[in-house]
Length: 259
Length: 292
Image (cartoon, rainbow over all chains, first blue to last red; front, side, top):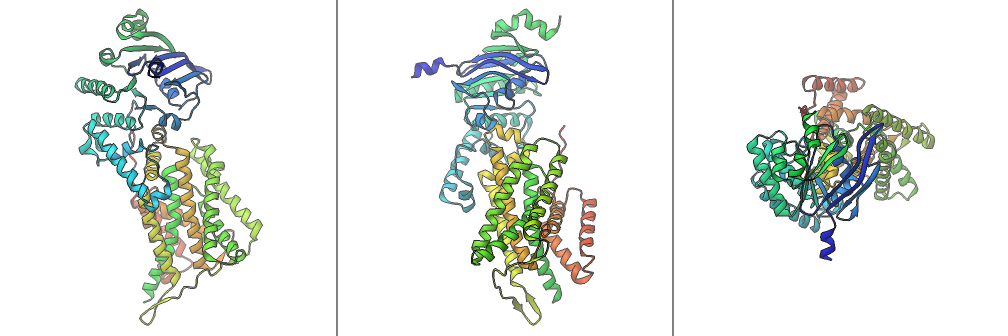
């Protein structure tokens, strides 16, 4: 049993494609991410990287291809289903619930894990108190891992930028994902903040045994922590493989720097 | 003494507006649409209670329950059939659809009940309360005010202290992100409509008890005024809807008592215009920060 599970890749995408009107935004995209891997998805602007994330999370429905998460076919599933069954993400432009507290942001990710009915909540039946207590405990544990426990009652909007990034990762982890998607986590960060972010990402992988797929433009971050890379250009895979090798690929250099 | 009785009458009328305004504001805050058919749900609630009370042996609680259930089902169905397919399209399309639903409900009521006003059943015999020599307070007024306050408190607790409330707030801020966190957006919006419609049923009950007559257009004027109340208090804000509704009722009743019955509606709207000139987001409305 253990053996076969280890052989299934965490994420396997076959021949994924989508077109908007006449525009083929992503075409025959393949990727295989192993459990516990830190995988980078890079490419010039407009190459279709975020579209791939939107396909993986069910925001867009693919016109061709299949998405398998830990062996389960997620193709065509709703975003809510995918959110509850193993894929969580962060956003390039942070999309926290800004007018909710830091702890409440994390609690939204617990939505399906601590069930009680609306009636139980209204009438304050025992299960309501039990589940709410568990949610607060679990939420505080998660916040502590990221050093955000003292800010639990702050409005998310009032956190400094770096902590908002951390909270977004924390909120994504609250859904207990199998695969974490990070969309340009280093966007808008200075080199010191990026260095700290790299530590955070490595820590998340260790601590939660997480499989991580990230989009990034910062080559320092990519070459520093990603084990494998896929390079997208004009919606198709340009190169794929070990980071060091891919970054030396002349096609990749051309795509980034021009002829 | 007539000032106090006018004031209490205003508070009770304001409570009805507040109940309706709450429905408007919740739907606007969470589903981001103006449900102009909301007022007509009140009329449906009132007619359902009227029909149930006259045909089911007159047990008031059974009648009220029928009204609640009918309105909840109607509200949720309307959202599923008329509004959900338009989610994500232009707000104008949704607004026009809502107006269409409003006329549809009025026409159906006209078809079934005709245009004559029907007497609303006296479901409870509440004795008026006498304080001192001249001050008489109608029992209905006290019940309306009390029930409304309890409902408000319940809704505030629901939104701020429970999981579905968190889901509502999350959907209101960012539907897409909420969905990715595993929040079922459709269910959350349905529950919002269900709660709003249940409040409309309660408002229908109190409207009937206060004015004693109901007709197919019963819901439209209170609906518009409650919308005004919601804007007045800051649309999207729950305490705002409550304060807006109650203030509106008090202003209307005092104008009727001291200035002129005919002018009372005009005065209400004049006050709205004044408030919006001074504070465009309404009394408790939040300034919407521009995304940079």
